[in-house]
Length: 345
Ligand code: ASP
Image (cartoon, rainbow, N blue to C red; front, top):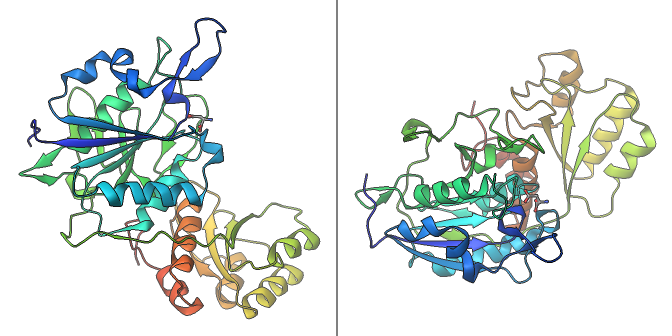
């Protein structure tokens, strides 16, 4: 492994807790000017590689992130792709799993690291987790083996763990350990040593980067719950323009067998709606047909999302539909992994 002075990393700062400091006068948390980043984290100066910064204007709490921001992020990466060895995206943790998933599907033939990180406590706080997250994310983005990047994929680095972005979910609002990859092992863990699990990391294909920037937002998520009413289900299924729906089911992909419910789904599918079955559980796999309560879904043409996360299923649909694929093609692509987001049959 080598890290040398010719390595260059572009840090893209979108906003979120990580970039905040306490205003001395008001005591409130305010975003700090990244021109002063070396004052905040003097140890950054010890990196031998070139670090450049691109700051969003205005900075965003990640709850305000949307597909336009993803398009912007993809464009920044595309425009700078040849000039940098890796990219670090500082981002609020709340929607980081959506953004990392979206970017993974937008960037085809990605052969360089794109590492999302953030923090639970602002950089300006004494006990911040941001300093370690930021520094290690840079180190991971720069890591290479004979000039081939070690982690040529979109990842989330948080609290000593490197995860595939489209396998991650935010599951804890307080702990530093805020993300989980319930269905895929870590890509690296950081202790005294940064240990890469090479067998889990996607291999570079050395093809030219292709960026799919157009996203379709005619998608949605319906989380089932006991007692869900026909009127509520209909209001979702009949949303004007809806093209695809992630159906969050129970356990291994189970749902009510009531006639009104299955009839409503049949009606929607016949009208062209794509429905993907994703489990509400963070770990384990949808297995349509295992129980009677999922056999009906399979029969009527609901697609099994297997072990994909809702975040990945939703953003994959946005990208595939945005690419103009027809229903049959989207249905086919949703059943197999294109960026390591699900376990194939
Ligand atoms: N609300 C913040 C955000 O997601 C929390 C964080 O930065 O982690 O932007």
